[in-house]
Amino acid sequence: MKIPATIVTGFLGAGKTTLIRHLLQNAEGRRIALIVNEFGDLGVDGGILKGCGIENCSDDDVVELSNGCICCTVADDFVPAMEALLARETPPDHIVIETSGLALPQPLLRAFAWPGLKTRVTVDGVVTVLDGPAVEAGTFAADTAAVDRQRAADDGLDHETPLSELYADQVACADMIVVNKTDLMADAGPLVTRLRGEARAGVQVVPAAHGALPIEVLLGRAQGAEDDISARHELHHHHHHHDDDHHDDGHDHDHDHDHDHGHDAFESFVVETGEVSDPAAFAGRLSEVIRDHDILRLKGFASVAGKPMRLTVQAVGPRVDHYFDRPLGADPRGARLVVIGQAGLDRAAITAALT
Image 1 (cartoon, rainbow, N blue to C red):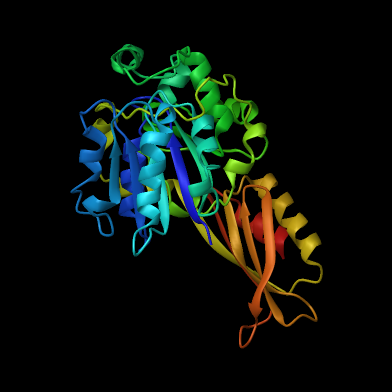
Image 2: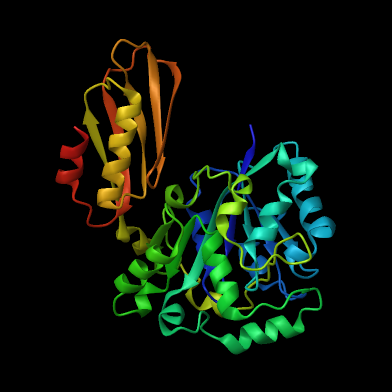
């Protein structure tokens, strides 16, 4: 089975490191390894993640790449780092790759086609973190001068991309767009709505404060993004074949605190219903309910009339996967589904639609 990898990209100061730290603090026992593309030799983000005292996050699980843009140094840095993680006696359950603030995600995706990686790792999803107030103001980053300084100081960067086009590439490549720092916005709703219109079909746009998102929303997306590059509309195909990644140099860290209240923005509940007669029709109905109610994740198990096997259901956005995984055995017949979404879900309507 391939090890899933999640790429976290976004501009300098958007909150990538804060989001990852929150993810680690709520890893629920998963062994997560990190590859951090540092800016120069400062090692700020790696330092924040190393020695953090988080269970299942040892210093050995944080790999820092500081020899320039990750997309420009794939062969020399990224691939060997990935191969070293995969060669461990106990490989990680999940790999998280934090790109730098100048990252072009598509070249990094192409690196997963390398022979040493293709059969062993899959891109679970690309998460693009945006600075909500900055994007709302049309500046894309809170400190554009800092981004330009980062660009000028990086000798390993072999492409020049205007910030507006770099932003468009990051959005185009995303499987999930996190509108961060919504606590600094009067109303994030219009921006979220606008981004949903700009993104590819099926891409989820989620508001967040301090990067506080449930791990089940971020991980387990099973996108296989490395096999879907052509749909991600890269604006610039550069002469190198690898992805751009530079790490935040401290602007993330004003919000790098524990904010458990971030989970209050999300809710989950269980719907129990009778057994399924037609799995394909059931999946279609789930997809419709997910669209109607903007559900982020839906998962669970069901029995199918006349069948001895258990039907597993996994949905990320409107894409619903279903398959038989094992005999039901002593499991009760019927369906039990967990619904996850932003706070305010119409539980009664969703339950009625699913039963």
